[in-house]
Amino acid sequence: MNPVASLPRLRDLSPVDRGRIESITRAVGVFGDAEIPVALEVFDAAIAGSPDYAAVGAELDGELAGWICWGPTPCTAGTYDLYWIAVDPGAHGTGIGTALLTRMERRLAGCGRLIVVETAGRPAYAATRAFYEARGYRRVAVIPEFYAPGDDQVVYTKALSSG
Ligand SMILES: CC(C)(COP(=O)(O)OP(=O)(O)OC[C@H]1O[C@@H](n2cnc3c(N)ncnc32)[C@H](O)[C@@H]1OP(=O)(O)O)[C@@H](O)C(=O)NCCC(=O)NCCS
Image (cartoon, rainbow, N blue to C red; front, side):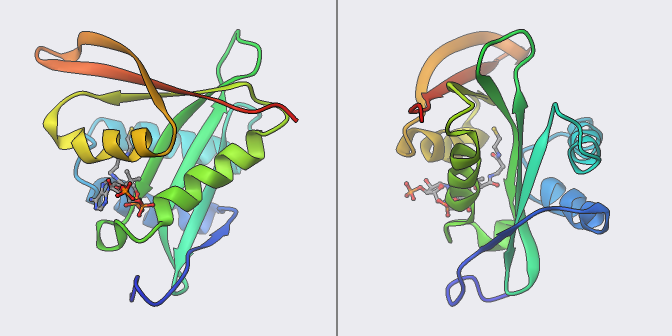
């Protein structure tokens, strides 16, 4: 893989991508073992056509290098949760995460009103928080000790322009 020379190609995901989705999601190193099956469950639902989840992948040089998954937040009007975003560590900083985020936002333009991202406050997520903040996501809440003692939840939102 030569991340510098190529632009990511965004595409729909299919069952054959499952193994690669799992290895990328594990490789980023911030998700715990218990979170991986949850990510795969959501991936399975998205590619099966569930109205609750949508997913997009990004290829670099013909190999899947990242994915994003989002869905409508139950019992809300036009609010969507970004559930998962993960990029192969070998390709971090090459624009794949931005391309995936932008694709989600474009897909939601017109039907979505607000995107919500729940992430963690611990140091391992500092680059992730910077990623969201630089892309217009506003830190709106911190729930202390949410995930575990000393492990806060940080909530970001971004308003989508209508039309
Ligand atoms: C956050 C993440 C999706 C960004 O993807 P990416 O392809 O590296 O992002 P891009 O190349 O489009 O943008 C790079 C930006 O992300 C940030 N970033 C986050 N992690 C980074 C990393 N390991 N290397 C380089 N940049 C990183 C940088 O601050 C950079 O910001 P800048 O362009 O404003 O300087 C990716 O780093 C990742 O998979 N992280 C681990 C999983 C994760 O935290 N998921 C979100 C859980 S809520």
